[in-house]
Image (cartoon, rainbow, N blue to C red):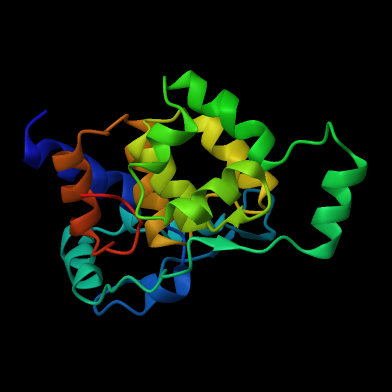
Length: 209
């Protein structure tokens, strides 16, 4: 796939899925669609909010270019967080309940990785990565998404790891929409991956480069 093709496909994916309507409607030139309409029965009905996405704008390419101009990666977080008291008690008293540390080995096995090989691809200090693997620390969302990309993870595994840490892929988040595209389309080649991240000014994922 040529560079222009996969970046164009990313733009199409973004226009079809990104759902922060406050930010979209603030783009200069954005035309607010008619959300209310008269249904066949004569009653006033409301269209689904997805009608506000960029893919339905006639000038979507111009609007997307303007949107990109104002982007900056504000998703910086530490690589880890401490589990809450509730999470610690839950893990202790429910030894079979899924946790990140318990699901991680299977998820890594699916992509022929180990905890050691995966950790070497992340800019997470080894001492903290070891604690994440053992379950005494929980990863932040940026760490999970970076792990998914560098290990070429399956979407189901990524969603499971996010879920046990109380995260989801959020369609109103630029980073999440771009990472979702990379995972679904299996664009894991470092050069192609980084070009897609750079296109949307995503600079804070803890990936070794």
